Structures are given as C-alpha cells and as structure tokens.
Length: 510
Image (cartoon, rainbow, N blue to C red; front, side, top):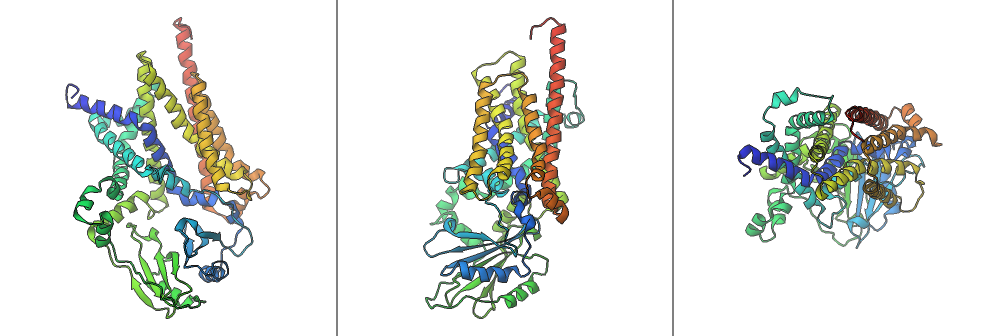
C-alpha cells in the first residue's frame, strides 16, 4: 500500500495504464473504426458504385454456383446488410478447409470490385492483432482487463467528478491535458466498462478454461453444446442428385416468417449434389440486440421447412446479448455515431494519460531510459498508428486494381508505414515533433477524398450522383478528421511558440 487506499489506487491507475497503454490504444482505435466497418467496405471497393444490384440475387447466385462451383460439397451466398449491400458467393470443394474456399462477387454489370482488406480488417485486427494463431486474442483480453483496472482505479483517483467535469484550462497545455483526461474518463466510464466486460465475457472459455475442463470431458465445447441451440446436422446419403434450380418457393416461406426488409443475410447450401442436401437461411442480425444466429433450414428436394432455431438457454443468451452490445450491429445511425464518439473519447483518454505521465517526468527533470522509451512509444504508437491507417487508405486507392495479391500488399503498406514512423521517431528528436507530425496526418486525411476526383473513374462524383451515403459519409469523415487534426497541430504550434517566447523573456537559452 502507498500510504493509504487512495494513494495505492493512484499508483495502480498510473502504472497499470502506462505499461500497456499502447496496446490498449491500438485495440480501441481499431475497435472504434469497426463501428463503421461496413461503410469502409463500400468506400474501399468504389467499383461497387458502378455495379447494378441483381433483381433476383439469390437465384442469380445459385445459377452462378452451378457453373463455378460444380462438384462442391458446400455453397454459400452472402447478401450483406442494409448498410453494406453486396452479393458474394463462395464454394468449398471436398477436402478443402474453410480458408481455402473460392469466392466471387456478383452483379448484373461486368465491373469487378478490387481485392482489398476492407473495413473488416479493423474488426479482425482489434481482437486478434493479426496474431490469430499466436495468442492475439489473449493480448486483446489482457488489454480489456487492464482497461477495466484503469477505469475502476481512476474513479478513486479523481474524487471531484463534477469539478473536474466543468474544468478546462486551455491556456496551459499541461493543465489542459489533465482536464481533458479527467473529462474523457468521466464521460466514458459506462462505455469502457461495457466494451471491456463484454469482450472478456465472450471469450471467457479462453481466459478461464479450468472450470469447464474440470466438469466436462470435452471442456467448454461440451458445455457450449449443452446451453446452445441445437443446430441441424444431416449426413450426406451418398446418392447423387441435381442441385435445386429455383428456390423462389423457399424464399416465399422465409418472407412469411421474417417479414422485415433485407431479412436474410446469409444462405448456406450443404451437399448440393447429394440427395440429402439442405439450405440454411440466416436472419439478419441487425434486427435484434442478441447476436444469436436465427436460422431456417429447408430440404433441397421437397423445399419444406425441416428445422428452425430454438431459443438458447439463459447462460448462452447472456453471452449473445453481451456480444450484441459489444458489436452494436443493432444500433441505428444515431446510436452508432454516439458509440463511435465514445470510442474516440476513450482513445483520447488513453493517449492523454500516457502523454501526461511523460510531461510530468520532463517537468521534474526525471528523464531516464524508461522515460525516453515512453516518449518513443508515444510517437511510434499514438502517432504511428494514425499514419499506418492513413497509408492503408492511400494504398487502397493508388495500388493497381488488377494487382496480384493486392490484399497482402495493402497489409504490407499498413505495417511498413508504421515501422517507418517508429524508425523516424527514434531518429528525429525535436520539440516540434508533434505539431509537425499532426500537420502531416491532418493534411493526409483532408486530401484523401480528393484522390477520387483525380482518378479517371471519379468515384466521389459517382457517389454524389447515386446518393450513396455510406461512401459520402466516409469521405466526409476523413475531411472532419483532417480539419480537426490540423487545428490541433496549429494549437500546439502556437502554444509552443508562446512557451519559447516566455523562456527567452526570462533569459533561458532554448
């Protein structure tokens, strides 16, 4: 204990937040972008602006699968959502794994969309860190736990909630950062708790597997089978049969049960060339808080309903609801934007905390190897991640659309630009680093939508003509980020000049 309970909480809040603040910051930034992953998918595949949606997408997908996926043991049709309408088919040949299956995007026009990591990259990165097979989800779980520790210890650290909330002293950078950190901490307490607790709960089987392994022979998998709805499983008969040619009758039955528009998001056709083939329709998850996959299963031969999803047991329902809260697929536009802002505030909370710790060491002349390491990590991660994200968007526009392994090249640009920023941060030691660096980021994001006007296809004009608000919203968001970052860069530059003038007046050599 550091003298008393509150001092201990201050120490815990400071160093639990500092030691992993860069990991937590990375997870929160990419997680915040995930709220608009579907809109980013549209922006990163601008060719879709020129594509015409199929009038009968499901039957078009089935007829195409007959040609392209002949002999496959599974067909899949992805219909997207209201925010990201698309038609993508995939087929899995016997002996192939899920990752090896073939994919193709369909439309009534002949324009093909470019290969890109898309906005879904941020969804996967924020919980797996591109280390899916190397413990990435454990690292993100540690980040969530540390954030919870920081939130609760911060409550005891900042006792004067109302006074801190209405205090904003912009005349002094250090005090202004302290006030911003306090305000962001107060505003984001419920949000951070919900996000971190739901992340830990959903992956509870990974983080705390001992109890399930003790009581069940197959561990959590057996426990999950007992509390989850029973899925329909039917083995192939071995008797060959032609795939279904027209599933309009099945679609009519689905629409009678699910009457909302765009009710189906995904269709799986198991064993299309076998007599026991069946189709599974997945309901669009944007209609409910729970992330449970509600399904309807139809026999391919008789076209009759043979199975529907049963409600999960209460423990599994709680898990589904927490996952639904975490992903916010159910959220309308206004609520999603509010959650996005809370994510931005959380990122600001983490960044200001790390910068404040360093500023205190600089003010007290306690710079040592650890402090220098913190300074480099602040520049490399807090600034470098923004450069990496911006570079990914530029790569999406500049790289040739017919380039081989284009997705892998985009990833190389993302991590390569991040690495270059880290090297530059270690080499360039300047008191004006942040103001210049923020100016670079702001100018980059502000000019990003203008690339569409320079390209021959004029995607931005096409989006305005077709009133594609998903695309236009992303472009407008880039401009807002650019203007806000330029304002912050100019503000820091002015404060730095004023600070230098005061030092010169006092006779201090700069």
